Image 1 (cartoon, chains in turn orange, red):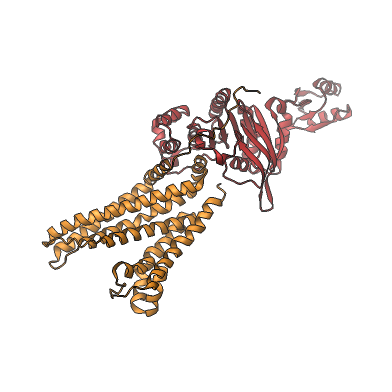
Image 2 (image 1 turned 180 degrees about the vertical axis):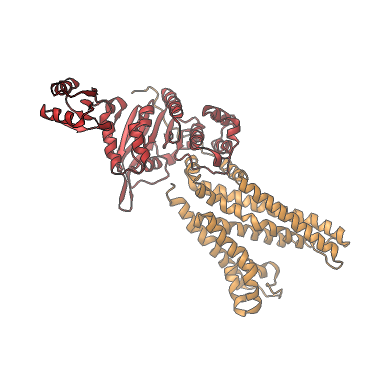
Length: 274
Length: 304
């Protein structure tokens, strides 16, 4: 059959602009029922955190929580569930096999990963801003309830460390998700190493054994960051910050973000999409 | 247009696609027919740039899929209708694609209407869709960007007979406007209804290709009698070679007249005597599926 107009592909057409890919990825973080419940749960946790803090301030005459303290409290419920978004943005595509149509609309997978990374970082930074803002509001409310003058002990360095560590956890979640390409495996590994061990296992070891104080900062960037951020270690002892503290911090970042990120990215870019 | 040249894909020692070459031209609907596991999906994934070929080449409109800017607006691809996030609504799936391609969101409503998904259905989550509804959604998604070329893997799977005829007229109109369509199926009946050109693939290799008329036309005769062995004996003694064919009949290279005379001479009453249209394709397909009978549905499709 001869057709006069043989349809040709237009290779001069503009690419899908990056901001549109980001817009789609941000939208995808919120358009399923699962993500809606995750957001609602986080909202409830924040509400609880504010309520409990204010209750403690109100019931105890000699307790005052500072602006920095409130922001730390607010960031906890945010960092508890939100890294799941960083995980399922990757593993959800593989689990639901929607990556088939995703990669046919933008065959350059590195651009999709880039858009997902930007959307995850936007969420991380957005939540921190929210945490600081809620901390400030709670600080004023706390001062009113507790009958003391609000303390604005908030340094630029505090904010930067808060933001930096929050981003590091999101990046860790993102890197692990590319490594495993499986929601259950990634969520398990992430929460064991980012939440369970640092909260339940490391502290008793840290406070009991000298070797643990040397070892744990190598494998946990939150512990490694403590002396750098505040000049105190997890015991609250003042330490003189040396090169080794920076090396440990960098090592922990490479261990949890660099290595899984590079191996995972290779996996995402190379593997056959079925 | 679509061009596949000497395409091969190895998985370890297994050749999933073995030196496959074919072309799909504008204005035609090409059916890619083969049993499950014959290499259809692998070939289509290679065309869409999702799988890397071991050797050979596959181009769409003269270029590799990966080099097409904003490909959704130029090539419509549906590789697996069930591969959508089950928690999203049908409308949301189309909306995400429309945003990616930079289309106005009115296009989403147009496509929903085209594939007959009601506004209520479009607000349900894909988890609650039947396979037929998922196929309609997938077809809407592939047509969203008004592409000139369509690549559809098993699009009729899960559609009822009315749905299959709907798809035929949809794709027929699309091809009449100059579009190129490649669609696959493991059911001969679907391909017969929808396609103009047929490529038959088995064990990774192309075993036949041509227009529907060419492939369905077979010289010879199909004959069937109540007394099967009496008929077989009568024809054999008259020197007419026969092969068993579908439905307990026989096929012969001889003309219907010769076969009829031989049967009459032996006094065998015939139930059926006709030119063997399509029997060749059917037999070939039966043979292909016979040793790889992966599911009863395949045979069902052949005799349908």
